[in-house]
Length: 464
Image (cartoon, rainbow, N blue to C red):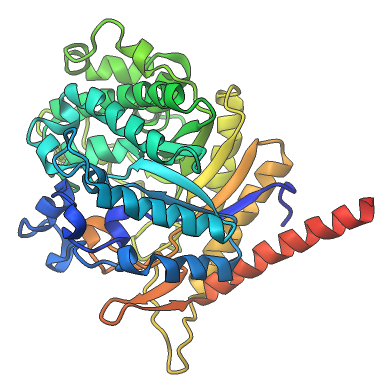
């Protein structure tokens, strides 16, 4: 397993999933606070009030990163910590927290990669329409400017929005994520406004701090279909690919939307698409963040299938093909490391203008707990990690401009609508005591990083 000499290894987290500390130090209410407080929305009635208590234990968690030997840490900035009401009122204690976090990372030689938006929208903005209302583009741009002014002297790489597809379709389409709306018109509007918000914020941040690099983290997949000869099925794949993989890439890189998908959205899109909007969205990525967990397997809808959204374009999500392979993770997702290689090669071929790719999320949920000796033997996660890192190394060897791999996640954490039932971390968290235990997968990740660094050092010494 060989990576480029300057390759970056990191771990990822998100603010609402780990920070906890509820509403202390002035943090405002976000849509996930409201959603989690709604009966039946989150498993076991869980919420992020405490989570991993990272807000108070960030030094301990950075020490764990140092022990693992990672080069970088991807975290997100909670919008309601900086601006509790989503307006111009600043909460300095929120800014102070992220200043402390960034400084501690740098003191430990760990590069910060900041995500502006990882789903914790101030509830006050949602009350005005949230991502379905175009006023959010200006609000998000102001948020990005404030973050750049405060932190860009130490943070050079920024992801504007994490998984805008989930923001749009899970939040406003089928409602399984906050804010829990089920409205196809709102989902299409959110898909459009997130594209605009990325472009507007990126340009504005670079006016404030010309040295920063901005990108998107897009949850991408390789689609497989039951029958390549079935035109209905391959046309469906084109629509789904346009909706998930291409919508934000084509708009940011080229200032256009995938034609077939845009036509399928029809008036739902044209009524929110104003003249000049795509010029706003057009802001070529300095780097692309790829969040990959598994391939997707499509089957044609059956007569008895009903759309998840009334009046929808097609049943959403699609019925899975009967060919979904085993094994599967605790989330029910198939383990398909070859699909990551195929996806990275596809990006290189289909978007050659993208010259820097980072896998910003990749990981698996498995439930293993510490055994009697206090060891977490998560062999399935080890296999998942190694096989997917091999795919990244192979893609790099085949000319894909990939520069980084971030494992999701550093810590077991609040897994959105699944609450605390699913564990993605390479560090186990006992939520009752907040004790951290590095899992076997964490030690394997550490050893792979150390092996790479040793190889690079040996190569450098041989050239002297």
